[in-house]
Amino acid sequence: INSKLPNIETSIFAKMSKMAADHNALNLSQGFPNFPSDPALNALVDQAMSDGYNQYAPMPGDFGLRMEISKKIENLHDRFYNPEIEITITAGATQAIFTIIAATISKGDEVIIFTPAYDCYAPTVELFGGKIVPIQLKPPFYEVDWQEVADNISSKTKMIIINSPHNPSGMLFSKDDMLELQDLAEKNDLLVLSDEVYEHIIFDGNVHQSASKFEALAERSFVTASFGKTFHNTGWKMGYCTAPENLMKDFQKVHQFVVFCVNHPIQKALATYLKDKNHYLKLSDFYQQKRDFFLHLMEGSNFKIVPSKGTYFQMLDFTEISNENDIAFAERLTKEHKIATIPTSVFNEGRKDFKQIRVCFAKTDETLAEAAKILREL
Ligand code: PMP
Ligand code: GLN
Image 1 (cartoon, protein in one colour):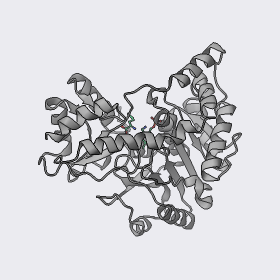
Image 2: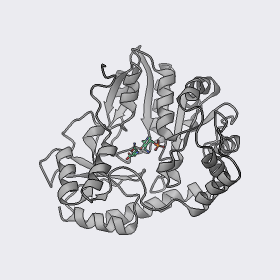
Image 3: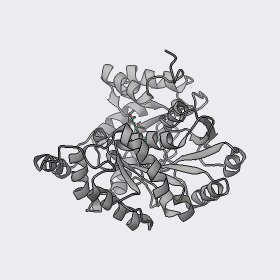
């Protein structure tokens, strides 16, 4: 059989987490917290199971949960998504992204992504016959050159994929970035996939610029989010997608045959938990404390560091530490120094000129202190 993705290897997250386990290393590679999700939320899941929510949920998701999501977005971004027809609950943002691309991209369509890019975008586009047009974000601050984006739009361009706060760089799209994007998308009649899984993890008083804030952009955007990131339970694989009715109709045509619906008791629990805004509004402060703690511990290290502005990731530039490429460096760190990180060339089409690794700081203060102790000695 000919592979449909001949050049794709096992995901770096699977690879590095396994290497961490095999070598008994601290795992700061794959992005997940090493502290528990709120016992009150866990209890709500138990309760929903006892209450008998153990059969299929409605295809688009539990209506109560869709209503709470709609209210949240209206409060935060002043945009109303009709919970009946414009919101679908998904098995994490990953399934939402897959479904959006499956529903919209056909053979020959071009899709603009910004590199370094989260690993699932390109293979999924290629699976449906689309062609990736990568545009490099400019280090050290990973900014977008919008003229370059305009120059790369062709008659075949169908979609632009954005991700702010950005994994792995921790950069944010500003309001001006969003207005530039809106302008280009309107002029060229493009769809937008806005991956906003770190929407509630944003530092230094910055404000998340959701695609749903901008009227003309929202009209042509699929926005996706992840409860796993927000509520410290990535293993539950719960997320959602919002889009205007005409786009959501096509999304649901695919969704119903990918999974039909997702975990019912967890949806019931989230519908209750989401009613308390503190559960997500306090997240930025929580993670800023962790970022600041880690950066403080890393003062005087040989890594060059531009502080992350959002997400729970920090990039570390090792130019002054080693001549190795990032993959060799990350593997050696795991095996010899017992700390696993993510080499970032995997997000950058394999380019080896970026001497950067990514660490996840969604960890207990003890783990961060242990990690910084190892990293400072390099
Ligand atoms: N997009 C980005 C940028 C991510 O970092 C992740 C990892 N959580 C996802 C999507 C996938 O999210 P989920 O775990 O909810 O599928
Ligand atoms: N989003 C997580 C990260 O960037 C990993 C998710 C996954 O393992 N696919 O580390």
